[in-house]
Length: 410
Image (cartoon, rainbow, N blue to C red):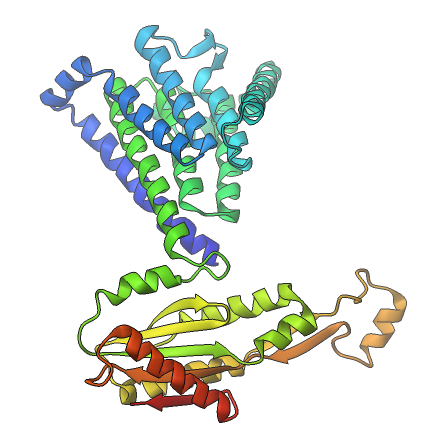
């Protein structure tokens, strides 16, 4: 569910931008038509800038995407032909196969061996798509004709039933990939695939539509690099919440009234010693996800190790204590299930019989609790680090009081 939300949040803005670009192109404003004829090199310049930034950040897939997206534009611009073999194999379809293949791959950098491997993969994907297309083209697809006329009667002259079928399969394959990992980079690369069918469509003002769409795509590729780099710098890699660096930046925006809460996972070292670091990482993710749900206007950060920081701007301790108590109970009431390493992987008759005697064989429920220390900015503690020190002392008071509680220092 979380992946679907990220997918929607990171894909829809790009789709809206591309749709607006196509609407602007279809308006056929005289200034746009004049620009289209005089600045045909501008998409090359924009995509070249995007490729250079991608190289700087070692985004090999994005660099290849920039090059592959320009190939149909260059082919149509200088030769007026989008087919490797006229009336047989459309170039955009073959390039989509290569780009969908790359989407499932990882960024390999630009070492000579890795670069050669990337080119080999592109060649293999194009060869497989070419072979599949030529094989399927000999088959009778008359049964798809009614569907073709019903779904896209206006564009049936531009796309055969085979073209539409293969485009749909490749897009669904790419959509599955970004559903598994909806990063900004993956989502923008997926959206760029949608430009390829546009390049095969011979409609009014097609060249202008492609030019504006390529400019928008170059902007989106640049933004994806910036956003992913920002997330790497300001989000904790393990838990996904804001990091200590983001906390220090956020502090600069605080006014003269705020509350700082230091939170610590109780007996965290024993989790690592007893169950291993993998379980310890699960505990950190669990607590982090609960911290981000705190109510009362709080903002959660991972301070380091098993410590978290909550900031409540324009609040007083009395106003946030009910919200902290609700957060503490939410964490404490969650039963975390840990699977024993010696649990049998496959069901047997013996394990089936034992289930009647034991409800959860090979599993153990553990309880995670947190202690909280609260401090507010005051005349005695006017600087943020002084307030944090007070909150840390309050956290120490909570530990001495038996843990799993909230303590305040003024």
